[in-house]
View (tube, rainbow, N blue to C red):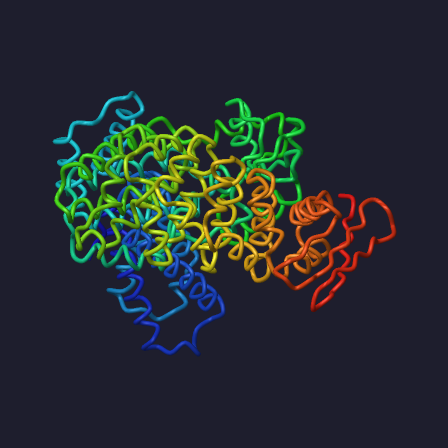
Length: 629
């Protein structure tokens, strides 16, 4: 069966191969042992030529139709090269030295003449389709949406892309081309992304949102598929190491820089944060002593090595002064953005008015769209998705929950909540925080992960604290401290919430809050321990004497602080030292903990420890040396 495109070139090459196969059959009958060395050498070259021909024909059969159109001239050139090589091979082939039958000699001679006369052949029909494809992209580039009837005629009638499944295959194959893109090959990555956005738009414009051949089941197993690495952060794609992603944008960092608190961000994201008037570290909430950004060259090199090892295109910024220029070069094209806007509009329309099945498919697609970059997140938010995602979160419909629509809505809100201007908008949406809190308590592991991350992002906006208290998010976050998969983010969110007095009061009123944070200090990850001790310290600072008393009475706190002071991360050691100094300022520099009579003595800036004895059934003097950090 001939491929859909390059039919004339393919047919011509196949005919030539058939003649060569007749030649090979003749030699098989003669026996290769009788052949001259020059004939054997020609056979080796012929083998390579046939092998390359097979690769080219297989490539055309298995590639994206859009990609074949985009590469129409280049692929035609490959066919022409093979024709030239066949001509050269037959010119040097010693046909007079072998005893070939007359008819075989005539066929070989005819093939030689045809190959000599062959010229580069670019199919005019294929070329007209290629130009039409660029026309559609140019329409988006100019801010216009292409005529739906023209799109239907082009994709359905001329390209035979007739259903949602074939559209999905085209998207996946095009995305693989983006991942494997060579910088010397046209079109460039931004233009390729524009075509990906175009075909994604057509998938929903032309084939609507109903499930096609078990597509919902396919999406459930999408983590086994390959695809474009711009995401995450997405289950469908190669998982990017967490430390390689910017804590603000969640995208792979191109130019990692260090701020005064020691945290690393992508330069473009943290610069935008500062330009918005923020003077705190987004991740830790600490005040930024200065706005100087120090390049994290070690991390940048690690990211580059990881990208190279996984075949992922990465364009690190070698000179920070040239950052602006380089970033623009790697930014999505206007066509891609406009096509994504149109797609987001279609998706939101279905979230608003579609059938339950259509809403589920739309939620799945909008989740992935939200994870493919900040521009797409903006498209989704501006299209009005947040209220409709919130409705999906609270939907009692069994079908919606069965097919993970609720989880996809949470995942999308998590992606949107990474953008500062959307944090307050999400929190103000009636029922949104309550639904995320419920999902954190009752959802699947993936649903809980997206819910807790969204709540963490919302908690970084100081005006959301009251709303999170009212919605029951505090209780959900405290409960999540005991869940290994989400405890780290839950402790981080609580550390942010307790900075405000009303947040500290709410957390202090949760019976299991302090014990849960203590448990994190004992069994959590290094980052989890860091977040837990930070939350306890802020609880003491903002919660008053009652909250401080609860913290100081926590069993085993002293030994855990001692351990963190010497084994914790840099931030954990600093927070542990500050919490120890809170004890020092207490009257008599000592307290009874839980009736156990455990003595605490603290050495401040002196080398000698102060020992304090306590009355009680058990006396356990313990020294915590507080280093100057």
